[in-house]
Image (cartoon, rainbow over all chains, first blue to last red; front, side, top):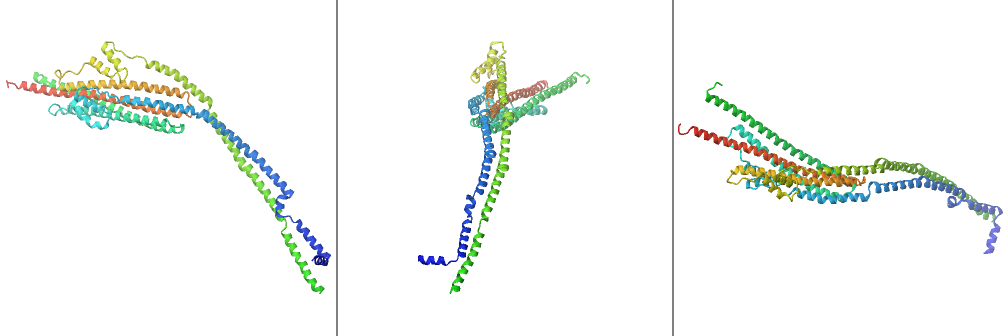
Length: 271
Length: 264
């Protein structure tokens, strides 16, 4: 076998051997793909320089500003925690709401203490209905009022003009009593709302407190409107009172003129 | 035989040439292309880091810095916060003391024993002193006349007038008490404001709004009492007018009856 192989090699010409050796050398010199990417020096140097550049950029252009931003955020956080929203001050303000709760409840109870003082049955009934703070009692005010102050005179007892004035005056007096009843009931609702809002405030955050404040401001505005309507009713009562006095002066003047005419007739004096 | 054997060798030699060409075709042109791509890719990363991320981060840092400066120098400068606290503290101390002195000034003015007692009862503690108001009022303004001394209509009206007056005195007394309590709430809110922070101030402001609503409701109670008083006064005058008309009608009838007496 060995002899056959040696004989076979021997049989090859020198030229052929040279061909084969050249081909083998060429193949050996072929740079494989892997070596081309990682092994050869020029590539490695370029990649290394590029990566170093990127690393420098990451340090200077990215990491440094990010560090500065983090520092600024930290500074802002400390400022907000210590100066703008210190927890102690927030809790103190909440504590104040807890403290006020009892005061509000006490004031509400005080405003509901009975002030009824009448002693006779009819005035007692009238006063109970007008001080009841119950809007449902408005229906009783008319009858109770008449029981105390009497009805409008009969047509046979007074001139129509006088009856009109008396009826108008009674109407305004009753309306004022009814309005007072309404205002009392509205005030009671507001006092209830005060306690509810205050309870809510005890757990509020600086951000949500502004929302409760907006609600309280709306309630204040509404309360102003109710107060305004009470003052308007008061203006009407006083207007009717003035009109009543004016009407009485007019009636007196008319009576004086009639009396003068009658006296002249009786005495026979020319008019 | 030699020629016959030489032909296949020649063919073998010829076959080596394309094999060599094929091997050369697969040669390292590919390696050179990859290096170029890597350089390009690295340059792109550098550009992105420098111009894209770096520039944005630079702007972000600048904006963050501006916001911090805005908050610390313009919105919540510590000096201004401390100044406000100092101002609140100083004014609270100054005015609260003055208010306290003014509000505690006595306004009682009655000189005789009974009126003095009445006055001190309706300016005193509510509602514990309410029983005294009724007694002292009766002492000064007398009680409703007994049934034997006055008609029921008169007695009713007198009783209603008295009741309205006493009820209003009690309402005023309650109002004094709630007004004192509200003023005390205002004082403590103001003192609290002097140690507040910008972040806790909204809670105190809300508290003030709520207390203001309480005060509005108490004022409405007082307006309602004033309305009742005015209505009672109007009703009283009107009742007198009604009675006068009825009395006049009765008198007229009696005069007519007298005139058309036995002579006619």
